Image (cartoon, rainbow, N blue to C red; front, side):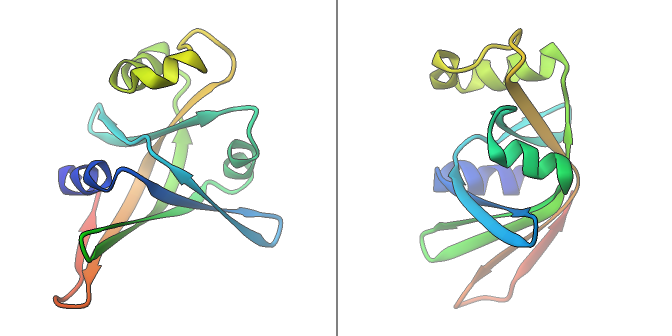
Length: 130
């Protein structure tokens, strides 16, 4: 999982795919952290992306960096504990202008089960399960 986290941090931006009804939806994200041995992301409960994850928690994200890309797929689970929210916000202080661990909007979600594939045009894909 650390390798997945490192890749996402080095890439800076990843693209999260969800489903809205029968249509795919993709948008840029930047938050990814490890907390209690799980890979977490963050969003707002008022956003469409959160509503889509509530309806179908299986997502995929993709990032590209220096000729290599990663695809991470799995099931996201909401963690409404203040400790999890605080950890995410403390590690991403720029989010504090929009979110707070005590508000009703902040959502942190972790991959209950995940699979990452790191690929490039010059080497065989590497699979990581976490």
